[in-house]
View 1 (tube, rainbow, N blue to C red):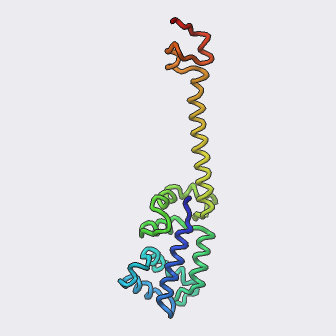
View 2 (cartoon, one colour):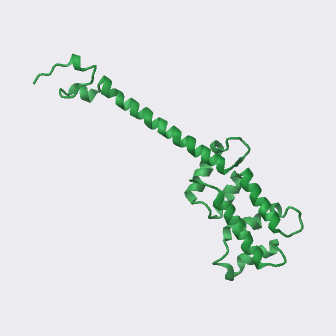
View 3 (tube, rainbow, N blue to C red):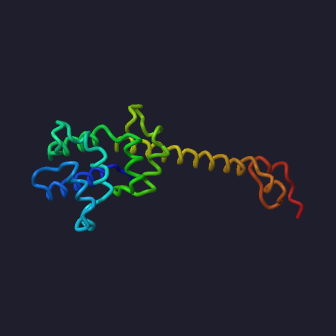
Length: 180
């Protein structure tokens, strides 16, 4: 099932990795340096690091130029509770963020307005799950209506069955004569 938890986990682990590299705290300069350091190629998720860099001022709640563990955890927890905006999801998708598949990003972005059931401009895991459940229900109802419509020909007869002498519906039987 599609979930945004992979994004939150990716942001959290990227922050933790970067913070472990810089004992004086995670600054905008530290993030920029880490992103260009070739030693970090295998361990640093560039997409999430880019997101942290681009949204640094929003993450640095007290404005001291350093993202503390508490600030990062509060922001990520707040994102998880209130959901992500379409702009945040688009930014993460455009930068190639992992955490969810590209098809899930596309699915969420294509259906964002329908998923945003409370109209707050953000979607949560609960809204995604509710939308997927509703979509599955509608798909099943459509399938059942299609079966119902197709099965009506069994009762009333269809053009193919009315021209065949060996196959009759309940209503057409009394009007047919078997001329064999």
